[in-house]
Length: 439
Image 1: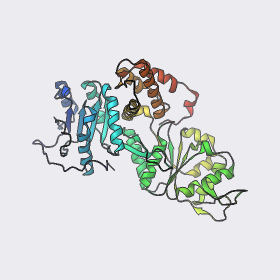
Image 2 (image 1 turned 90 degrees about the vertical axis):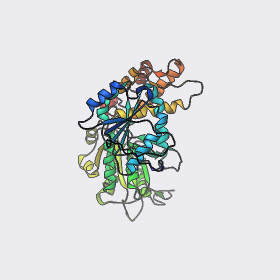
Image 3 (image 1 turned 90 degrees about the horizontal axis):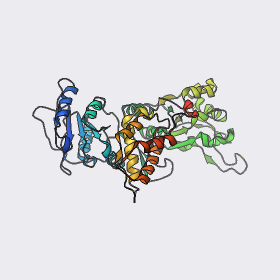
Image 4 (image 1 turned 45 degrees about the vertical axis):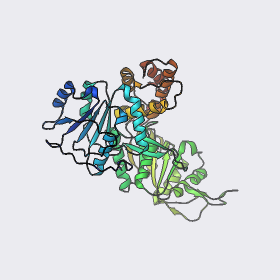
């Protein structure tokens, strides 16, 4: 799945005289063969592993094979990264495991967002890790944490509307090792017949995108979502009709309705806000789960339950357990999947910040959009708890962007801009924080 729409240029052989390097550095002219960085790398790399330097590939030139295990783009203009990224994709398609580590500074953050958005829309993101640093000392401090392999794609592409035909897609970015591990687990579940899963994650953590990824790997049927908080009226007949469907004449004036289980066929029924699984909802699910079959409302014959069920909730497991009958709850029998919180996933935070700024900048007419965040503003973002995860971070950046645009001064979002957004959208104290899932 690594960038199926990547370049198909013929790759020219290029074998180094000393054998392949562990790390190959491609730097902007300002940092080319920087002596401080050279010295730091020699101390940092594993014993017996060497690094070398190389010029950036020429745009449009035939791809050359990548012998190095890791490529480091050191403060290179993101607009010039295509050839490196294409070479990495080619190496991975050929069975390699090369990783491209992209280090950018504050002034390059919006440009990185433009590059990530374009590559993501082309489905050409794989084998990439991200780093935000201001100088080579910061790169050296962060580099050991980036010298780890990337097992999964960096992106989940999903329709803006998962159940209505559309040509618009959105990107869910997967760069951090924590999220990479979760995606690998979801892929294993879907590929090995685990047909009942429970996604636990705080608000705005991307549970719908991850459930859709399960569906993509499962690769059959339809993806059908049910939001229990919106749909559950406490009426068992209504809930049964929603999930199992009903036949014509099941109640006065009723025409036939295809329920979520039937509509999904062998695909995935995604039951969101599932902390609402109580009372009539639980009764309907127990009827279906106990024997793997369900009875549409008013029907005389049962139908087999063929779809996989993915539950999702923003509540903690303790909150779920305490809200239901434990005997009923254990009958759900779902394998759990915990979504790691955003504040623990620095590389995903970089991707969210970069792509959000790029999206906002693309709409500007009279404003001069910021190039990124100041170092102090980024540290404020980095240290924030982000109870609302991706959704909260996007709202804070949108608020900061507006304040910046009105202020119209320097080229970077500053601490006051971010602080004002955090006070609005990510309060450090709120009564709801205690009930949300934490991972």
